[in-house]
Length: 87
Image 1 (cartoon, rainbow, N blue to C red):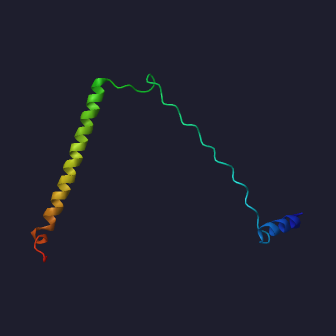
Image 2 (image 1 turned 90 degrees about the horizontal axis):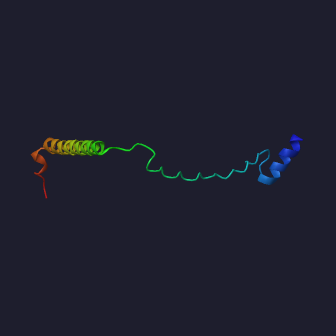
Image 3 (image 1 turned 45 degrees about the horizontal axis):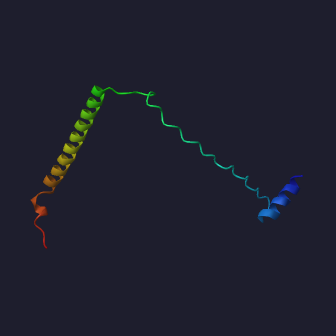
């Protein structure tokens, strides 16, 4: 019986003893979840929203200052010799 199987796969693929690949199952796509109703989930108070906003502004300010500091340190480390070059 195994000889028949090898012979049948050899005639289909052209390679002796090559097993045919199983057919791939189609991938199902899950339906998107509906958005939660406004009553569900965490609802922030106005004070919590203000604190979150102030924290976000503080983080953005610190990040901007850090970028500016890195830029200034890089320019200082390059030194004034950068400006003296042939044109």
